[in-house]
Length: 195
Length: 276
Image 1 (cartoon, rainbow over the protein chains, first blue to last red):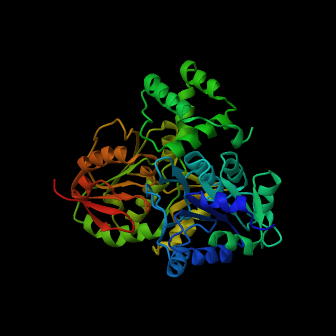
Image 2 (image 1 turned 45 degrees about the vertical axis):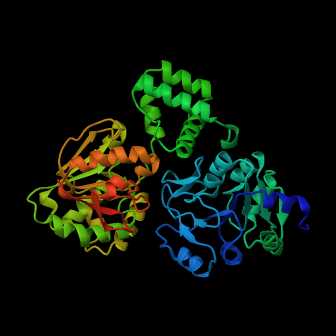
């Protein structure tokens, strides 16, 4: 699949980039964080499954290599362009209409807290068609339903090609329920984000 | 029915909020909307109700509101959640409390009591157990009944024991329980000075004076203006130099209260009251 005009157009017209991943997604998401440059003009929200009580090691590592300001989400933080936000562990991260985050400690979804579904679904309610959401490697189905909701709201939805994913179950789950506009190879994901 | 087939509109949510306020006297209008929507959707799924069924039950069915209230509020909690918080409490707050003959502690929004009992254990490890009076409050009667029992499933205790271990506290976590096959009960001495009662942070007044208030992962469900109202309640409920502990991701955002509380530990959101 080549990067076509439609996908580039829709990418340019979004205000929010959502990234969801689980097992096998770390290197890809780390690579994306490193590649994002000022002038992106979008807010970036990242949800990665991780262990409970896993102290903010990911944030430290990401922040050290990011050219954009990066922070772990705290309750009621506002969402600003050219900033990267990471969902904290042991909370769900929700997006409010007024352009801020709220956190939630309720039950895990697909054994996951943070759950990608929860963030994606609330993003669809808050931002409708103004998101680009990318779901990458992972060993469960979290994120698929959220991606579907985003797609139905008119946002651009992308899955990493299952052949490129260390754990193909997550992108496959999304593809199987028709939640995906485009299936992209890993290098194509990077190519798009540079446009 | 799956989650995606339920889609409550904002107007419907507003309608439910005003209906609940009018009929049952509980005001959810300053709850954060995204999470309130999730909870409402969850109730509809669990009880297999559409929007109109839900409305009908809230209006006509005696007793349904109790179930509704239980499900709409989040009662997920852990013992020793966020070990770094308990470490900070041990090193920065407990030494300040030793001056008191009676140490009154309020766990606000205590759900099934895990946090309150964590505090009870912590006070015992600091040899302050006999001086501590621990008050747990919540808007749900049923969770308070669970809290009073002080019985937790062995499956959950495994996680709690890991948390405890990360707190670097002395003693074995299992030593605080009488263990059974499926669950374990806290030792009587840890339950001795604990009191549980219904209290609604949004509507009920000050009921005692405390040296320490913990209200962790409750503010996340409230809009900032409601948080500020409750900060007034906490301020008025604290003794001079009393301590307030919010959740690790909850900070005081109100400018007014930034002058009324000094941050003792910014990362763990532990504050101390300034003035009387």
